[in-house]
Amino acid sequence: MMGASHFRWMSSARSDAGRVRDINEDACLDEPARGCWAVADGMGGHAVGDVASRLVIEQLRQLPQAASGITQGLAQARAHLLTANQQLRDEAARRQVQRIGSTVIVLLACDRFCGYLWAGDSRIYLCRKGQLRQLTRDHSHVEELRALGQLTDDEARHHPAHHIITRAVGATDRLDLDEDTLEVADGDVFLLCSDGLSNELTDAEILATLAATSPFDCRRVTDELVDRALARGGRDNITAVVAQAEDPLASDKTLLNPTS
Image 1 (cartoon, rainbow, N blue to C red):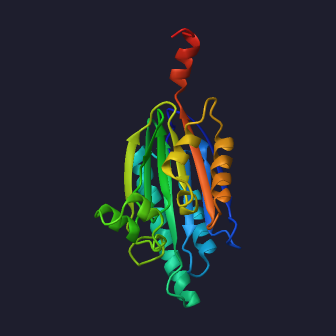
Image 2: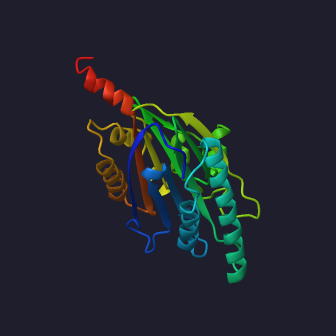
Image 3: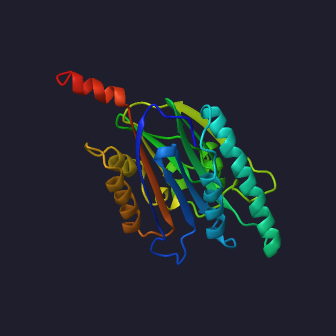
């Protein structure tokens, strides 16, 4: 999808219905060779959330094979998500329901950069040199209260309205997406997840898993994150996509200078 990335990417994805829900309304995309990863979470309490999340991911799967840079890649992803938004609006009208919607978080890699765009409360985290940073800001009522200082982080995590989101694909005729870019560093680890994971685990627990001792194993880390969320109760669908960037030039230098 994207132009060639400077980095070697390794990734893994896992999605689980959890211990309470009968249907998994999450869907994900894990395509390291194309530099494209995504998570979509069908809106709980609305009709056919699983249909919504699958449609969003299918639109992203159809992204063109080449882009001249991260800016064009993000523009293409945005266009496909706008198409998904209209398709979900049309489907809701056909089924005579108010809305069929899904959150979305997309990560794209090109050259030395990553770009990401999102709507809703699915998140992307970056683990770099032992530090964890949440790159996205939830589009939710609770996050608005937290940003205004009316809720602490802990109060926000346990607030009864934490599931009420303010943006989603298919929610309204106009889809608002936030986006950003960053320069990638050797060893960066990205986590894309639905709120079924982030509502069960604290940032400290996520960091402890992502900053595991080397060699880093994407599959093992993904499984550990989902298993931890299940052990906490698995009250919602749980999806995790973990991607790690490796700079081949840095690796080559290490091989050439083993004592450095």
